[in-house]
Length: 283
Image (cartoon, rainbow, N blue to C red; front, side):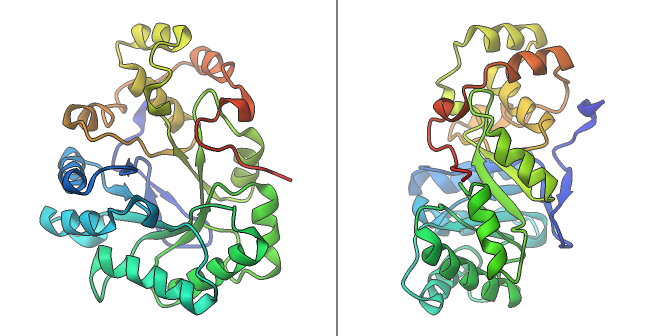
């Protein structure tokens, strides 16, 4: 039974001895005066995986929360991301290093560093990846990956990547946007698939199918969506600054969505039209 998932579960990354926690805590748009408090609440609740980005402008606050938590650094998995290329491999590397220092201090590291977007074109993507590989070789990023990459973007990397496949691809995933092509491709290649916006920013809280299923299990719609992501084999990254929601979003390990109800949720898929942020381009 998949109800035996636990918040402490770790999944192995491809070609690596690094393991990623099955549930993450996202801090997208978490204001700097709030982000640290939310991270501390998440860590106190049992999350051991925090997902930030240069674009979110709160890496420093995540780093401060890590220190304040007094949890040993190697027990918390921290991800950040670089959004756009800086003009050369070296300039990108400097940008990456700045993030590592904000999060972990001068001798620190991050557990996962991602290219945030595929939109900078083949040259930009290559530049950022080569800078990430340098960071990885030095142990300042324990694993490296991509976000919002389609099949063509990951395939294109084969020609220059020393580290292939990327360890992770983080994409928008929920019942309305299941991105089946890239999901299947990643699973086939052993790439861990992370789900951002797994609760669709609550836009679907009144969807009749979802409401009905949530009632049936005595769970909130958010809990059903996070559980759905877990049962799909994704690593969901729910985001909230509401302390009660931080707790309830982690209370998804005591029930199991039946095969029939998973199929009903699967049937909600609208393909790329169901995306609220971005569906990847696969060719």
